[in-house]
Image (cartoon, rainbow, N blue to C red; front, top):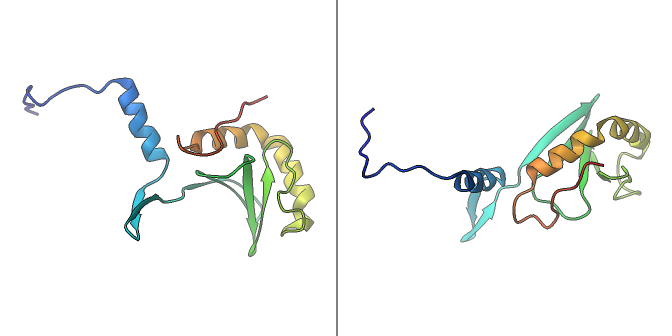
Length: 127
């Protein structure tokens, strides 16, 4: 490959990290004349047919979503308490708590990995 040295330069690590962070936040889409980020999600695990998801841009407290058969609820990462106690999936709360006790560290790692720089809820420490 013939590269013209007048146009060749190296990016420093922080420049590359900034681009990575920007890409991790999700693609920018135009909607009604505004630039918005498309919400990214990562499927963390499945418990049978239950699907565990963390979204990239979220509100406090740090939490994960569980979906099953048209029902959904959200649970805090710290204590696995349901954000909507009267919401869906009540019959599976014990299953979800048991799974959480074995996978809390994985949830925290996924939460931290998906945090965009402008997310209102930052990373959380693994304790």
